[in-house]
Length: 416
Image (cartoon, rainbow, N blue to C red):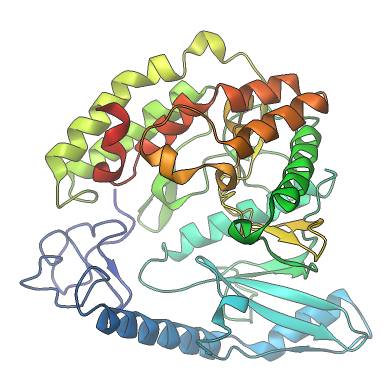
């Protein structure tokens, strides 16, 4: 089952996931129509490089302008003022500016400032809408999961944005024109790990260890994503690669009772998508054999007898820009929870991705980095002995995680 079908008229093939989504011509293309004899849009690996960049920049500008035209700002303001009666507010219309676009646009979402008369500022968090976006029913499911996750985090002593209101894209009463969340705007700037000094990095790591210890006090019962605002129900995984759409309805993998079940289901899904020309269409045989090998490895990497542990919330996108810091490197917020899901201690409290030495990691070095080692020591010092072991003994599982669904020519060195 595909996410999208090919955009070409009278073609009923499933589109190729990720590489078949072209933001320049704004189409979803199947393996036949993705061939260079048909699809002429430049890619980022084509020279001259500046031509490709210009095409993608123009596509971004068109995306923001189109989204801005869809948003009913007056309706958005009405919703915000209903949540703070008697206080006027103004929603800043989207404007495309290449110099400041990073302030409003991330990889998956765009933010609109909603400024109240008394100086309070909220954000309207809106999913981006381009050829790489999943269908509306999947977008809504992911938003719904992030909403429920933020509600869960209100009772956890980790700094996260407070959810104030929301409307789904498919809600009949949504007059804003897009799906959105209203959240508080937290102070601080995204962490720039590369520019931080060693002392500043240690300060950040100590705080991340505190957050991990706090999350470990709130165990859950299954592997999956929150999907019901207002309670802690765990449902299917809220990520595009775990989802299909049939007759307008979403079908997502999960929930699971073990990581072995999680990866077995995920890898079978990848193999099916290779066979139906939805993944790895440039090198399907290599990709199929690698993922079939990974399927055989699942029992060794995640033996069921070692999975009698509790389940905890995992951010799942902890590359560093999910952390907001002030000038003293105090963490003011942990943001971007849209892909969060619950998982065993060995995964949820493995090293945050920001702490990896990527050069050594991609070369297959089994040793953890100095930052990871400091993180493990901090966890142990604060009483999180089991969490520290998840870091020190987690490299094999991290390699395995990166191999599943990633580019085959990036991941093969781990197993050669």
